[in-house]
View 1: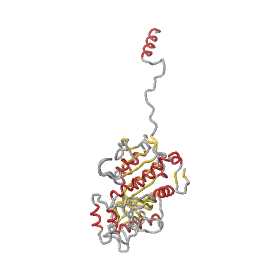
View 2 (view 1 turned 90 degrees about the vertical axis):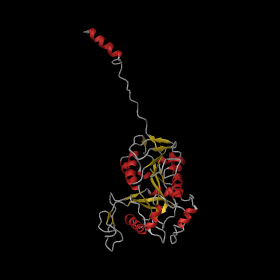
View 3 (view 1 turned 180 degrees about the horizontal axis):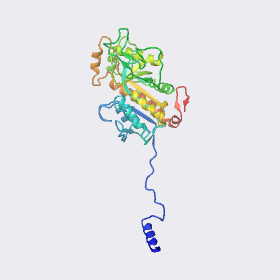
View 4 (view 1 turned 180 degrees about the vertical axis):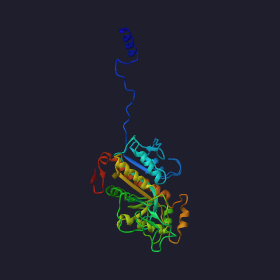
Length: 363
C-alpha cells in the first residue's frame, strides 16, 4: 500500500501537483483607458481622411485622431489621440446615434466617468436668429418626432398645425406641464454659458458663396450678418423638414415646451437619441450628463428665401448641396476644438470640477 502511495506522490510531483498550488494562468485585465473628451460626429461622406469631408473628417485630421479602435457593437470604429480625446461617428438618424452611444458607454475598455461629451454637427438654421456658417451652443434640445399628427389636408380650420403634443388633443393645448418622457433635454446651463463665453469671439469663415446666399434673406437682419457664435434651442428629429410654415411650427413647439424664454434656432436629426442614451448611462454611473455639450453649425436655412417656394428650396439641398456646407463643417471643428483644447490643457482642474462662465465650478 505504501508503495502505491509513494508512486502516486511521485507522479503528482512530476506533474507539478501537490508540491505547491497551481499557478494562475489568467492575465489581469488592463485598466480602462481614461477619456477626457468624446467628440461625436454623425455622418461622413467617404473615408475618415483624405477625401470630401463629412462632419467627422476635420476632427480626425486636425485633432490627430490616429489610433483606430474597433467598436463592433456601434456604427463605426473609434479614433483616439494621445491627449485622451476620443472621436466617434454615430451614423445618421436617432436610432443609430442612440445605439452607437450606448455601445461606447457600456464598453469596459474606457473610463468615461470624467469625460466631457461634445456633439459637433451641422443643421438647418432659423433665419430670424442665425446666419449661414454660424455656430449654436444648444440650451434645450427637443424631440420633434414624439407627437400626434393629423395630415395637413384634414386638420380643423382653426388649427395652425396638424402636430399635437403627446397626451393632448389639440396643438399647444393648455395646461402644459413637462413630465418624465416628454421630449425635452436641458443641457447644463453653467457649462453651456462657459462654452459660449469661451468661443463667442471666434472669427468664422465668411466666403463669397455664403454672402451671396444670405443676401437673398432681406427682412431677416440676423440672417444677413456674417457668421457668429450664439446659443439657443434646437429640435431633433429623423424627418428632414423644410419650409416657412414648419419654421413657424418649430418656434411655437419650442416655446410651448420651454416657455417664453425658449428660442428655436436650429434643426438636427440625431441629438435626442444621443442624449437619451447618455441620460441612461448617467443613471448607471457610466457618464456624467452634466459634462455634455451640443454644438450645431448652420449649413442651410430651414425655410426658403423670400420669393421662393419650399419645394424649390428643398430641391437645391437634395444630395447635401447646402449653402454653407464646407463653412459649417469648419465652424463646428474650430468652435468645438476651442473647448476641447481648454479641457485638455487644464485637465487636472476640469476633471475635478465642471467650469462655468462665472468662474464657479460644479463637482
